[in-house]
Length: 339
Image 1 (cartoon, rainbow, N blue to C red):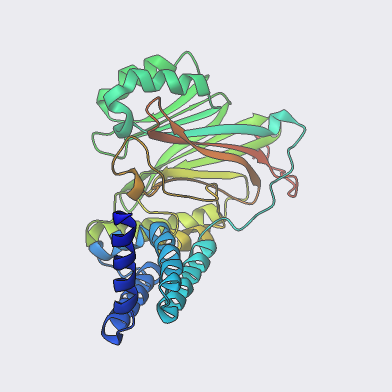
Image 2 (image 1 turned 45 degrees about the vertical axis):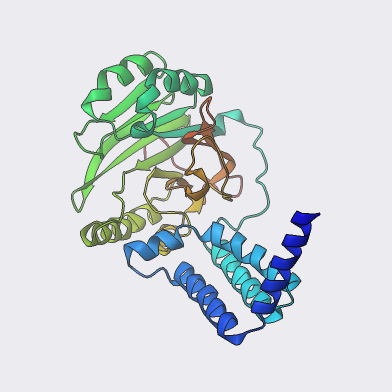
């Protein structure tokens, strides 16, 4: 009873304080300012950290909007709920807007699965994580941050599992290796402003070809890294948009899905995001609530995404992402191995 009485006193005090304009106006300005930061995304590192938490902020505005309404502060409630609605529209514009699930193709030869892992995130328990990945056994397996310390162990482990692989070993974060169960038609690694991009074309059936493009993007923590990312995304978007065949683009891009830079790239390249939603969650990591995904798998109009999910280890910690795709039934794919 004493606790209930104390909570009642606190509630009455809050309700009284919110009647003062000197408190209401700064609160409203703060809510509006944070919302504008999430939408406009000013090019400052400490403001970018705020915009990366747009989903959490949206949930916070919703909770505060209801709380202020119960505290009889209608103005504050309307501001919070309006900003919540604005952030919803912002995230919707930055996401995969196709709501209808694609029809499953009867021909199983037109379906394939892809997994993407960053070796820096699984190196502490590498043997255990590799056994977990081996249970998933995707058709295409991509490892990034492939440095010489992993070369012997990774290649030896998967060389007998997959029919072919393409490796690009580097001392820095740009190294990659791609394992595949499909025949490789051609493969190359090209530079865009000194940033290596790996490109592999697979033949998944007699007359069906898919193209995989992958690269690691340094986090935008300096002005030079930001400029490099913009130039790489600009040139890469033109290259992907002109591909004329099924394309999968993936990598650790170090941008969240709703970042304006990544959204512009996706629209220019005519790509869809495999990740249809994201919701913060708790796990064994105390930072998981503030975690935002920076690894992505995109696909173009010649493909449908049947499934996308994160890959978790035995401790419920995310170690990678997995997607399942099929050739779209709405497009005529005339690409052949000869082309």
